[in-house]
Image (cartoon, rainbow, N blue to C red):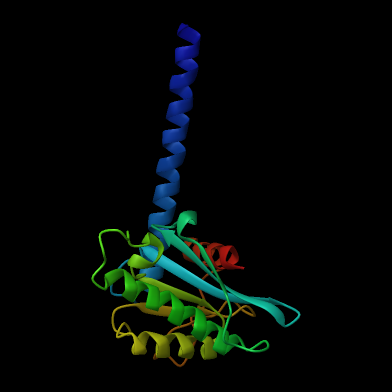
Length: 194
């Protein structure tokens, strides 16, 4: 019994140490993103959106959510594109974002007691990460403007080619150090959205 207690205590200590290490790493990554992207707040809730298709058909959009640097898989959502014919990434991204923020509005319209708001959509992100380039960024900004959220939600787009981050109002993209915690987190979130 004594040996089992010692083993359990050592395992618990190891789990605590790993949790503390992971928490510290996430804090460093979020702090780096706040600094490098010149965000007014730490991006504790990050939502990433991506559009995918199979040879131009079966077009879907995905939404992944990270809270304090870790995935919130219960909040992940997939959207089947309904209004776009053919592979039009910009129109598909617009549809997905409009549907996402329309759901946010619905959560805040006089909710009936019978309907519990969907936690995936009830909160707005601190940072909206769009998989794509400047065109995708423009689409996201237009949608946020339509919902009155443009000044409330930070947006950045990540292009696949050089892992460049495109930020509104900046002529030049931002390149994070490929070995940095911030870049690792951005890539991990984007890869989850694929």
